[in-house]
Amino acid sequence: MSLTVGEAEAVRRLLGFVLEQDGATAVTAQEAKRAAAYLADAAASTLAHERRRGPPMNDAPHTLKLAGGGDDVVPAGTPPTKSSDGLDRLEQAHRALGESRMIRTDAAADPASVTPEQREAVIDRVRQYLLQHKGQYPQWQIARAIGVSSSVVSQVLSGSYKGDAAKICIALDGWLERRVEADATTKVADFVWTGVARQIRLAAKRAISAAEMDLDSRIGLVTGDPGCGKTKALQAIQRTTPGAILITLDFHAASPTGVLEKIAKALDLGDGIRGSRQLFDAIVDKLEDTNRLLIVDEIHALLDARDDRAFHTLRHLADQSRAPQLWSSTSDLMVELRKRERKREPLAQITRRIGFQLHLTAPLYARGGGNGGGRGGDAEPLFTVEEIIQIFAKNEMKLSRDAAMYLARLCTSPHLGLLGICTSLVAHTTFANKAEHRVITAAMLWEMHRTLAQPSELDLIDQLMRVDDVRTSVSKVG
Image: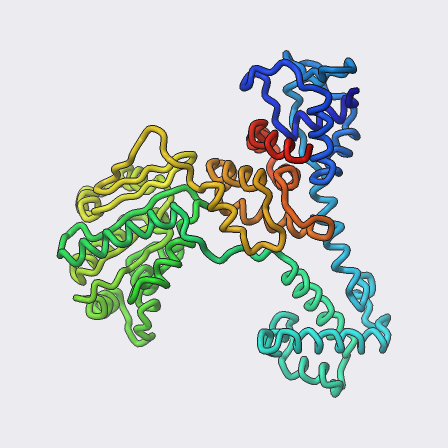
């Protein structure tokens, strides 16, 4: 009983058999066959792709032997290549959506080829869609999306348009296709109070407590790699904290005036205030003695400025209004500030007002108070498997346990995008597979991940497939 070389290589690559880690020298044919059966439902196209590659390279020091029959061997260390199967699945899913169009795409270049029956069919479908989604898509919004006036859309849908209705119907048909596609995309949970989010909320509470105790150190700082969930947590904190305001900075606002204008807009101060001095005074008047939390997301954007005046503007605002602040940044904020410190405005003027720092790092994150703290040693992962399952509980396709494990490991790898790439990966995998499957497996995610990734990331992606976790899933099949 044996597998072909191509099948055995596919099993080894997808399950991540690492001989040096578990001490194994062979995999039984029965175990390999059970693995192949599991993979047939989850990634049949991946197996076909591996077969098409032909015999693997034979220049690696280790091989995976199939014990119990057959002499096939699979060399370990085969150079990774991008998978085309994920692209094929996405293309098929898009083609299936396109088949529902009343006007074929190849006719779009020539409105004269659109028949009256096609025009009526498009108008009827758009009307039905708007009835099903009553109030969600006003005609002015549709008009803006296709580049015409709302009166034109109204006249076309009512049948009274005197112009080139065929051209408008082509645009409406395309708009409807995009809407149907959007409806078919993944429905991810809006927000879950994960361990990461609760830690960020703690930083906000400590900043508010410092303000209530009239301490100078009333600024909280949260740093972490992009994609670890900071922004979603800050948005939830703003919604659930009475009086809190949230601004998101960018390099266009990397100046004292730019920062003050963002805050003024969030406070709804109106457009009549001119000049940074007047803006500053108006904001102080609005925040003074209120203990309202000012949340500043992506504060590292201020590093694009030629000096540190914008940082010190926020510091002066905290001093004079006595209101707490919570800053969020990438991990390198303080390092970059120290590199560019200006002696006339010492960095200590800022750092001594930061009373609570939280550093979210992958694969481990430190919890601590004061100026950094942290547990060190064996800390918890950024997101647990249970939290991953909860985050994607509203998705159209449910996650299998091994898929949740894959995503949890992905959330420990800052080089691959953390939680942000997980959401994108689940969305693409759902869109490509939901017509044939109801559950997302690790093999599906792995296939799509390799399809979308850069070639330099393929080795890291392959390491996410671990034999101990996926063996458990395979044993359930047998």
